[in-house]
Length: 150
Image (cartoon, rainbow, N blue to C red):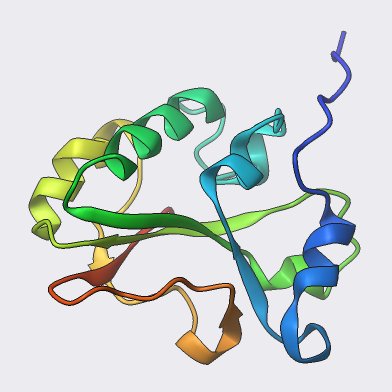
């Protein structure tokens, strides 16, 4: 028996309302906005769900633990562009952006890319920078890395 969904902090309609430039730019969500109240396990890394990938709560916990590091300015969820084109009911993520001064390999170990069944982090965003809105500033000495699943 499927349990009812918990009401998420942000709904798809609210995300669409925040999309800038007439809905052509994708808002980046905070960890709380994406993960709090979200029990849709395939809303991120759907190809790994059911095949050993940790549940959403574990993914959120790992990202929150990284976010509080002094060498991390911010962590944001990059939404999937198809969420804005197709008839989705839920908020669906493509990847996670991590603004940090930490080396890539340290971030990989800290989030546990092997356990998450993700790719190693890489510099940049999932889509062109100008396709996003609600992107915080990148402090001097930091860069944006992306954590993504294939």
